[in-house]
Image: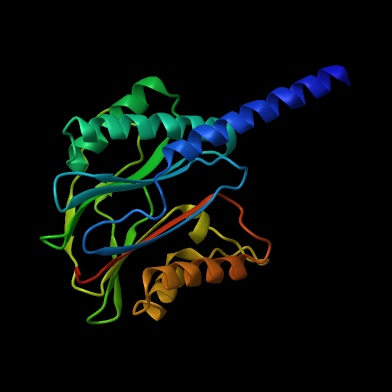
Length: 254
C-alpha cells in the first residue's frame, strides 16, 4: 500500500505540473485581433490536453493563429503539444510566419524526434485585417468552416497535406480566402465532430456545418455556445475526447 500511495502521489504531482505548464502556454481566451471578434472554448478531458490553440501578433494588422491535436490523451500528449507550441512560437518570432514554411519546419522536427505513432494535426494561418484575408495551410486537421454572411452558406477550407511527423518530405500548399463583414471562421478539434450518440453515429462535419449556418448571424460567443451545446446533446454521455473550438467573426473596426 505504501508503494501504491507513493506512485499515486508522484502521478498527481506530475499531473499538477503538466496542468500548470499547459495553462501558462495557452493564450488568454480574451485575445483581440483587429477586425475580428473571437470566442474560444477549451475543454481538456483529463485536466491536461493534447489539444492546442494559439494567437500570435505579427506585424501591424496581422495575427497568426493555430489549432492542433496530438494523437492520444493525457500527460504524454500534453508534453508533445507543449514542445510543438514552443517550436511554433520560436519560428514565428524569428520571422518564419508563412504557413507552408512553418508546417514544413514542424513536420521535419516531428519526423526526426518523435515516434511514428506520435503524429500531430495542425492548422496554421495568418489573419490580415487590412486585406480581410485568412491565409493558411493544413496538416491533417479537420477543415476550417467558412460561413459566408451574404449567402448563409458554408465552405470547407481544407488546403494542405498529411499530419505532422509521418513523412519527412511533405509539401504543404497554401490557401487563402477573403472575408466580408459578418463572415465567420470556425476552427475546432475532432472531439467535437467525433461526439458519438447511443447508436454509434458521430456528430460529424455536416451537423456542425448546419449549426454554424443556423447561428451564423449571431456573435461569435453565441455561435460557440450553440456549437458545443448541439454536439454535447448529440453525444448524450458527454465528451469522449479533448475539445477545442475557436470562432472568429469578421467585424467592422471601430
